[in-house]
Image 1 (cartoon, rainbow, N blue to C red):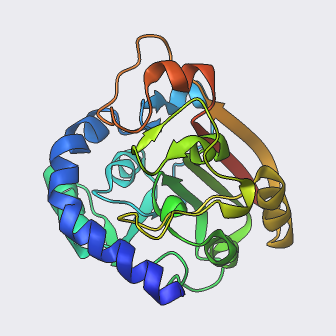
Image 2: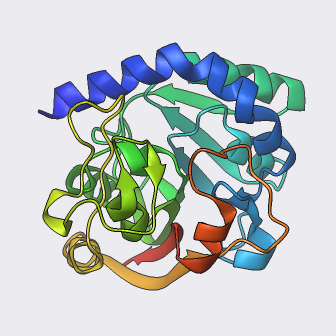
Length: 249
């Protein structure tokens, strides 16, 4: 089953990468050090440690806007993505910015790195949305050094529960139960989510201490290029996105 959902997601992103970067790439570049679809600045969220000198893995990097920005702050980032087409955009972005960036084609459930390779693993709606958490969390734990940080954003369980697959809209009602928090078979991609209790148990069993869970609430004047993801009013009333910050013990 792992191979099936990885292959499906890779095929989708290889086909969609150009259109995705056309629609969202410039905004992601201009507002690079920010979280979620409304690009809430890291300076306000405060999820990351000081990155200077850190070995950083961006998990599901797309065009590597975060990695390019962190390289400019003297971090040593590596961008990983399941899609070669997305990595082609990342290479151009790094060259345009004049930064040296290692880019790796792989899936988050089988990381091609040795134990304790990184100080920080981050993702902003990256591989964390599309990989099986029972696999990628343990792989991240393996590749993080002791005291290393895992910081990532993704859609919230509430957003997942309120997503209507027939209308392709998030609505103010529940459409699925917590026992079925995974994309339905007819969707273009396979995405994953867990109830909060399962996230907590998974992080603890993998050797993480949870330092924070930040529910992102966009300001009233927030803008996004992801208009079909969630309406601004919905996201301000209920948490549509979240940032987890965990420490490897």
